[in-house]
Image (cartoon, rainbow, N blue to C red; front, side, top):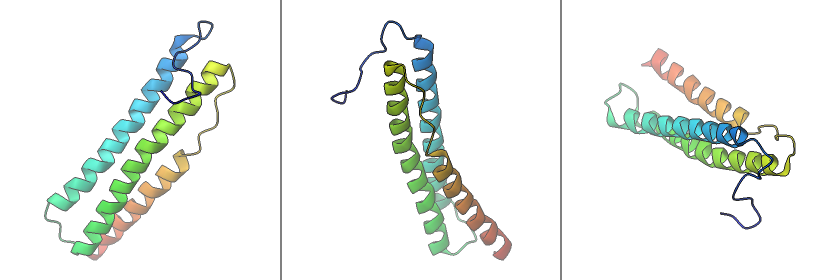
Length: 116
């Protein structure tokens, strides 16, 4: 583990909190994998869209997927540290970033559908 971080949950902390945090982390990882799969899929199939547009959308999806995975780990670590310290769980900062990235991709896809 990282230096200075708690490797186990203290005895006086209900382990269900840590397990819930882990489930949330895994949900974010599944989301990241879904975004990466979508990026690969739109490049692999023959879409009636200009190739540069397909590549930009695939790139945005892949970047969002990679970013979501990194943000998931950072959030998991912050929450684990808060649980171990008995502190309040920090507010999420990454949800808006991922939502905006997905909305941008959705907007680009809608434009391509209407134009193609």
